[in-house]
Image 1 (cartoon, rainbow, N blue to C red):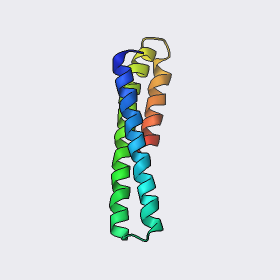
Image 2: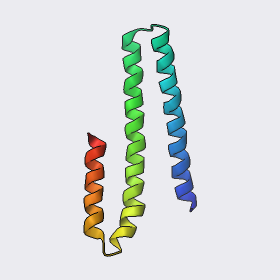
Image 3: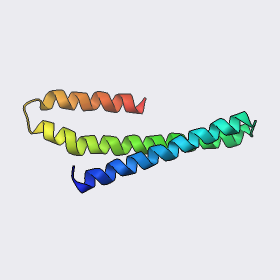
Image 4: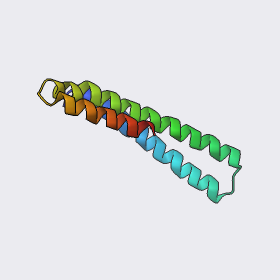
Length: 91
């Protein structure tokens, strides 16, 4: 694995750990009957963070996996797979 892939993987793992901490924080907030507005703000932050992680993974998939696949004969199938993945991601 080259250093750029290691850096991307490390960044994703760090972001996911931060998201995990945010989710645990929301659990505490609910348990402590905190203000709904504050909880919703935290949920919004988690959504944004998850979207960012998804974007990074999708970007990596396109740049690494898809480009390699397009060099082979199965490019039509891989493009359809990518489109299916994007549709699932944006739902």
